Length: 202
Image (cartoon, rainbow, N blue to C red; front, side, top):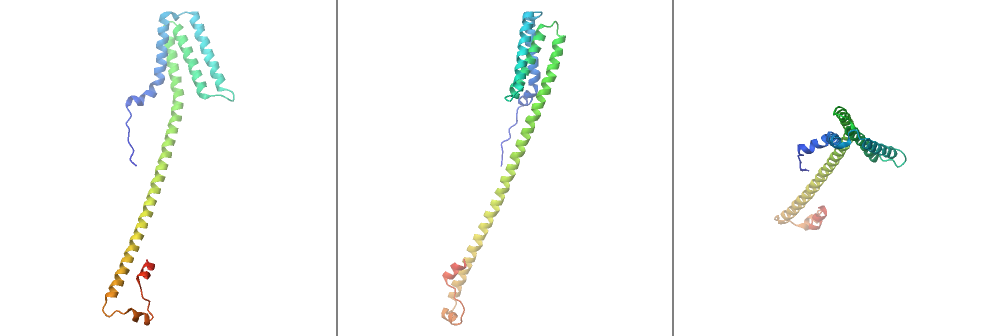
């Protein structure tokens, strides 16, 4: 089977790999903008971000336990808690040293978590492609067997038609021979081939 080959653009290939650093960089930039607009040393803002981060962490803990636990919801809640904590600290802190340190740690953790999902997705993709390859091989084998069977049936039909044609020609040739007497064959005890016998032979 001929399948269309699609070449993915290089941006489509690197976009998933760049997503973690883009996310943490966006949070850092927004936190520093917030810092420049009055969040620095603001106790109220720090308390708000702390409460939001704790609430998101508690939601993640509840989502990861119990019989109705959901890994996706838990992961999203924990990521939200980390982003809120990072935003609060980066917005409240003086200078860029601590925010940059937190940004580096958050980026490394984001890549560590993303690598796990990338490996799982890659394994699922490889397994799916292997399954498709096996199905294609199986279908190609069945098609080859059916083609061989059809060819064999055609050859049998051709040989049968050729035999019938040769037998008919022999009967006509024998009947056209001078001095041919069918009754003499019957008296001699030899079987007389007729067109009905030719059909039976075929």
